[in-house]
Length: 465
Image 1: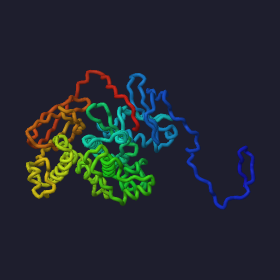
Image 2: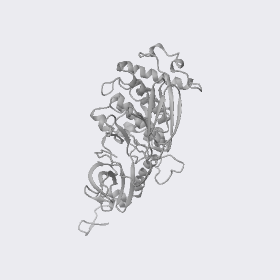
Image 3: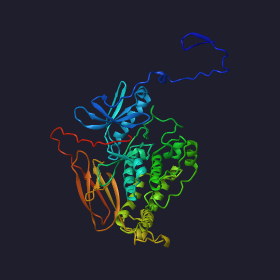
Image 4: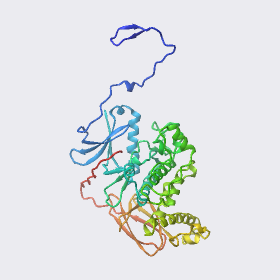
């Protein structure tokens, strides 16, 4: 048998191998490698100013529009991967899904461009750091855990309502924007492996059965086995994130995927510690929420992000109300959660049953050290158009996005709510919290006399998109 030598001449092979060892190679791998774009290059109307993120599929640049001066984040596929129709299609799907959801706690995609050798998405430029970076440096206090998780629940709930499952939720894909000095504004990033659960979603983009998608230690049991997933995979990942914020470590960790997969599938999560990484008592209600999200069988998990949000609402307000000791507060939170659960089954049509009336059988060991458990009232808010951000007009704290249901302590206090939606005039309402309420508000569009200058997007460094 003859083979070609390095200089092109034929040589005689001494002995043929007993079997054919030739390997089939993807022709794309043999094609000349295309260089990636670099800082200083011009793509469309944008100048690439700085590299701010690198991933397996692409690069993220801080960029400036040459004419308008507006700064954005440009997410570009690696040049070689622009030749792969499947990767380009997934990249486009990410942009479409994010635009479909259009939620204030999910990163915005302004444009998508596909040209020979250039495939990129134009995204808002964020200033701040990822939750993973913050957690590694200093951790979060309990109040911040509540605030971040409520915003995260709103974002995922909005995605799930449209049949979108993120499938790769982790601290590195949760960004804390520093635009508001008094609190962190959450943005969920990277819907690159998101799954669309609609009747017409099956296409060439559909992940094959048996394919493992996601970041291993945040995967649900069904993801680990490559089984079909739904929104409850995100609920499991939310539970892993919450567990990690409360304990400092995820429930399962191993450098060997087989061992990690075995733990996720068979071992119960280790009990959470009594103290957070910052030395605060772990509220029992948060510990229970994390464990309920981490159930192996998805039928046993928290049913939806709406339920997650309701459980967070039933405790976050108590956290703010009591100036007493943290130890007593942590005990009280567990009582409030149990009482709210009992209230939901005991309440009549007039909604007047109190938590105290609904829990006469509570064992003595669960008696609240802070006094009687408060009676609750429900405020339902619906806006036309929907998607308005609802906040406390006095404190500025964001409460959610319409349509929204709030569970609040009943009393004669007043609560001033403000609703804001792009292109519409802000709307305020003063509520008395002495009865359940259902409000339907029509937001008035702003007059548009002429072209308006677009607000500049905050600049900053972004570790990952």
